[in-house]
Image (cartoon, rainbow, N blue to C red):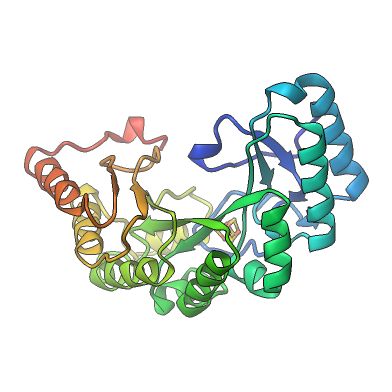
Length: 289
Ligand code: SF4
């Protein structure tokens, strides 16, 4: 099996079998994102995907415990094909425990509740949603193509259908002027979704991205560690999402936090205060920059 182009997956899927069911991202216009800019989006054919699955079945079938459907938003694939793939996984990988994928809010909202429930019953356990921000001004600025209301609605719909969600936000997306707005609205977004998992990445740009060019022109600023920590503090102070497991363990983050809302928020705030006091920030050479 050969992957087409670079393949991305969430940190928690590091040990999963990754199967490309799409190439690229169906949206592909977010101004900070470089992941799939070199790919022309397409849904792979049933034959292409089944060929990959079959090769993996023969080579490592009994060892596969988790499967991740890539690329950018595999949930965009028609439900009929996704169900066929999920049934193949269930019938041919005897020890598989779960299947997950990325999905946009629009992918979720386009499917009916019956479709989502059928996907869940067939083994699709969790959808990773890149929400990025809860502020509609910031979402429009980064050309996300979705509103905070739509993202919350998608999260609630997945919950009603028994599917777990893992929501990612990006620190620094509002620049210095937008710190409070981004932090408070993102907390409201998480509160509205009450996802199983939430995480924050720190803005990390390639020089050719539209947002890096905005910064180069002086139209936006890139936040340093102190501002990023301040933003996370404001975010945590506005969170009310009991049971959500929260992480800032991505390589891009200056401070790694891990806890469960709401009970661990005081401890995480204390850790951020300590980090600020002692300048305990992950250096850039360790941030994959
Ligand atoms: S951030 Fe997500 S939705 Fe936006 S272009 Fe990148 S992969 Fe696509």
